[in-house]
Length: 431
Image (cartoon, rainbow, N blue to C red; front, side, top):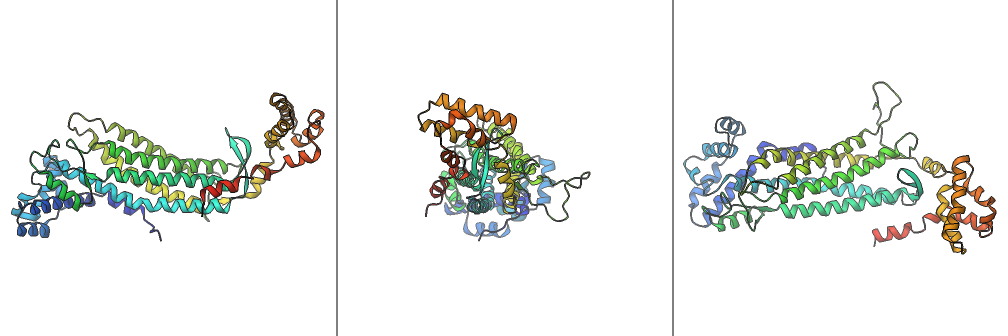
């Protein structure tokens, strides 16, 4: 059973308390590594473990004076640990702690958000099967094209979300690295063995090479995975917004009892959730651009990325977490109007069968160019007069030279468009 995570929990991952707690986890893992190598005595390590703590308020108070968050953090820890704090942060630089901890925080966030991917995939699967055989007009350029089934839309979205899940898992692998290699990544004041032991304790892999920081292509890949997912959610939301238009009304967001759509117009039922999802996708795309720009730093490191990441990484996870929750609710509670789908299928007076007629003429030996002219002149007349396309075809003497009345009847059947829907589903739902 998938646990129902809340937005509050995602917010807590990116809280100051959890951030400093993760920094402390890294520091203690390094202390353990030094202990394994005989630098920190057993009794000292035990005292450090027993006493190590921090105060967020105290860190903020110290930072106002020192203007350095890691120093403020270490000062607060030292006030709890006492004399043994000389071994805390031994041989390390700030980003040995910060970057390694950031990888852990991102992994926590991925673990929290991943079940929502899975739940949305399941919701899309359920709708794809439920509406597998429900005919609906397909649209290209916003204009009626040929029939599809409503379930096929959900099947396509399900496949895309499954790819998004794979991208998220790949991003998790890319970010599951740390570095404890000193000021410029050369291990000048710390042995590589410490990094190896500490990162194994933290379930991270040592970077093959680093500067003062892990290279930011890793973080950009995480933001890319989140942004592509957001674009899929936007795709779903935009489709539902279109289908909810008054002139279409083939599907609609759930409108709860007591809900109001407008302060001025009591009749309004607006696709507010879909519009909200669409807007938030824009935020994530903007964050991705910032993540890509963070990759180019001066020499072995500057801090131009730092202030950006304090915003874009937590905000992207929190935003996508909310978007997924909203999209799951949107899909699960979607109102569908099959009768309007049928009405819209017939809106163009049978023009959607034009390709069927063209191909039938070609099968009878008519040159494509000649057949196209026969079909198009009747189609344009139907557009202009509103007369049924089928009746025009039945009255066209040139067409009747090649197609019998029975053949025309078979051509104008919705089912003929959907003969291979089972093939598509069998590809996707192999037993």
